[in-house]
Length: 610
Image 1 (cartoon, rainbow, N blue to C red):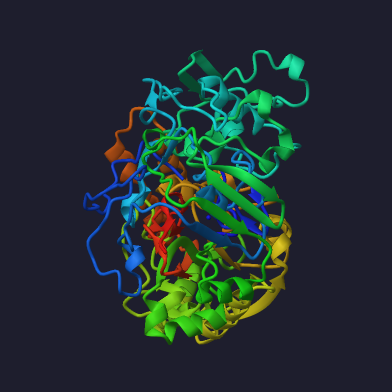
Image 2: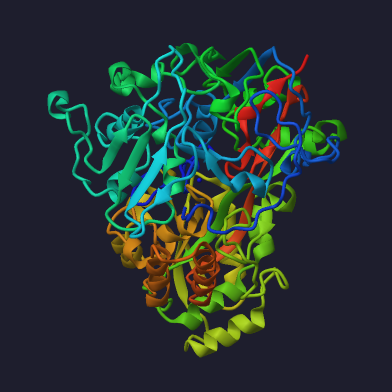
């Protein structure tokens, strides 16, 4: 999931990076109702009117305070909260978006069956009920998930919300000709994947999606093709926010989706401005994880990135909606000003900057040759390329970043203990793979990304120290993952043994982060996300074990670090940096903190003072 980029999906690849690698939005991942994770506890505090935010004690006058605590906690109402974005949303339709920031923003007007707990840091990785009364109940065979809706839920016009509205919300996402942007988990997981959606012939949609049933007005059941313990994470995606069939306008629904959240659309000028006002038919009991504090919320669109930053620092904009962090000029101003730093947070985004090391391109089909690259890489130079330790991120030694359920720290190739590279071990690995004098290999990168360019050049210089000659091949971002790095045939024809990339998860556990980039069944002839072409039977078997309906939560949680360690033992991925973003918030914003899941501020709980 960088915020203006998509998160990773089970099967689709959109934009210039693999989902969640692209919009982050995505990269979305695997569950078991939170798989027995250990989370950082949040001290219980006043949740205020309609807020589930826990207040953590701590100084609000320190740089990065919003990473771990609620800054300016308040229950005060009134005022206008202003967001701005340097681009536009892919869609404001909850069923047709894959941008991370729009998933976050949509919580203001759309409530899915399940959502994330509103609290800072790792606490915010927890799943909690949304429109449902509880997390899903799964059948003994793992094939049927049942949810019960809360009674009394209403749309903004006062119409009661029923299970049929949730079912219809899922049905409409099947028609990619009408709604092309959202993830495709439901067709992959449910047992009638050929369902065409409701738009082609409404007269024939009487039965609708047979794999989703509604035994009564408050019960909805999902029938899966095979067990998938992470299904609670899937229904936490905005696509399960209720949609009344008679109000659906297809692709134009984004112009005014009928609200089930604390705010509703007052006006929307596409590509220019959205104005939200309070939803009179919403009560805090409907979604304790959201608040209704500001009287009005304004989202200004299509400003230049520089203008967004300058308006933020001037106090004319409260929050940068895109959540990717300020640009270079604003970053320099903030970090040189103690006063500005007090309103800034170096948020862990959930993205990993890394290099795929292809297991099929000679001589990298030899494990020891791949290990030579792991040891020879200069992680400090890579960190510098991506912005440095303060705002770029921390040096990575694992595939999963720290905000993913299942993360376990280890340092197999001395990335932390010897970040400049262990040249002696690299040369020993070259001897072991029969390449004592080194070898030549191609490296692919996105030529229109300055950070990628610098990282590629740094990698070239680092590997040259042990005799590995790196030939640089730059490609445009828009087709990098479809035509070049994501095409196994192209990779092998052009000896692209090293391919730079970035990745994040559609949901915060090991399955969602690791599956698409390391499971053998993810290798595809085009739009390939397992770019290293890793097909390790041990890893594949561990993924298969993770979908067993008999697996306990603790057993499933224990699988993810095993897969991570095995990938590193295979030397198939070279982790570089756990990415950060420098976020700035208007000091007038209340209840502000970084939500661990989104890697940006939690938009559902904000207010404004003054």
